[in-house]
Length: 304
Figure 1 (spheres, rainbow, N blue to C red):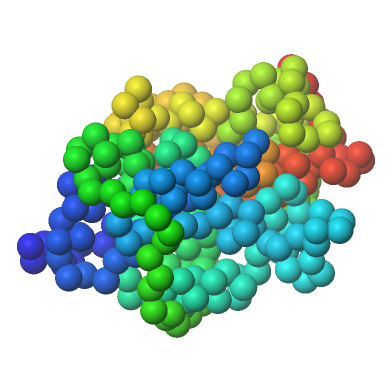
Figure 2: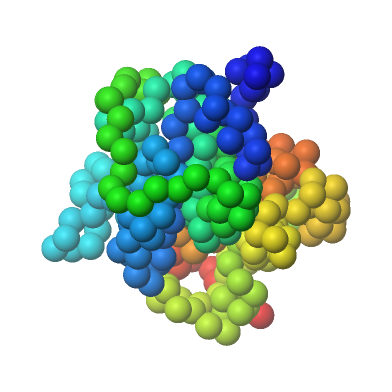
């Protein structure tokens, strides 16, 4: 038991490890981030039906993105740190929400979803961004938990006593559109930045675009669909496999220069996490992503 009292989980946590954490007296908070872009209420319905006991529900639009004005659909003035379909809230506003649901800086946070880490990765990244290192993704999500006989409950989220979550220096790197645009000029140079796009190949090539007004990708970007990080069991591939795949993708480019993006700064995070699992460090995130990039017609677009 003593081992689990001191282990801090910062990337992935396996089902048996979470069970042991629950059995220990260590301060722990579990977040369910289940979501569906096409049906924004679906994740909360899934949560109400089945969740890990004690879990708090984190809604992509309400909690993990800046609040939007219902009249315009745009973020409230001063509420967002970037653009795109899912702009990040300010660090202060996010920290206030974390405290309101009972998270304090001394806890271990565990995040999960039932969509292949697509949505809980966002909360993993945002907690790093507000300075909390002790956050891990439940490998395999709720499916792995239930397969292993983990306890579940239904009904509304458990209400935890409010806590004080204090902002600390950022442990994740956020990149702005201006930086990406300036970097394109240096991208061809040795040691220059490398943009990795996590969207599916047909969207990357510009053959389809279900969500944004312009189809295509940022010129020079490499494509690694976020689903490539998981094996058939829904868990992340072994570190050695991820390392070989990223080495092949980067083809000699410096991993420290990688900037990940997707459509709106959500599904890129599994690539960030996978690179870290592969031993390549914590790469940057362009959270505005394609939806912010293509909102300005003057920005270059590539297809094919």
